[in-house]
Length: 191
Image (cartoon, rainbow, N blue to C red):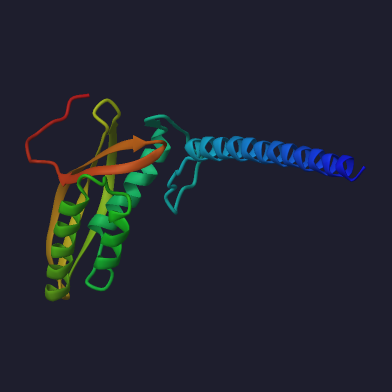
């Protein structure tokens, strides 16, 4: 009789082990399904930088954006890069670097911080007034024309009519500045 009791306990233990194994397998399956859901959700997440002064509806699809979005972002970038004084140049350049292409970031950082050093030592300031913007979506460029006024200390140094090219790309809906440079005199971009 005691032998039957032992056999019953052994059967109970085996049944309990089978139930625990089944529970562990169910938990493992749940963890795998939830992990897959988290990875899928993370891959579908998009980061879209919106300029602080956006006033209209904008649309970004793939590697294209509405003209309003490009216009506002170009204003934002040109303002950070070309309108500065010795007190705010370094901070503005740091903010500009946040939207720069990672491939060109080291060179841009070096150039902008060298410029910030020169601005701080000479107490220079600059103001750029946009007169027109032309978007060339095929080349992913925005041409910005305007008047650039520079001051050294309290004296007006120069007023120049100039054009700048803002080259950009989109990465998962995020605007990335690839290059900002002054358009060489005498060149004409055909659309």
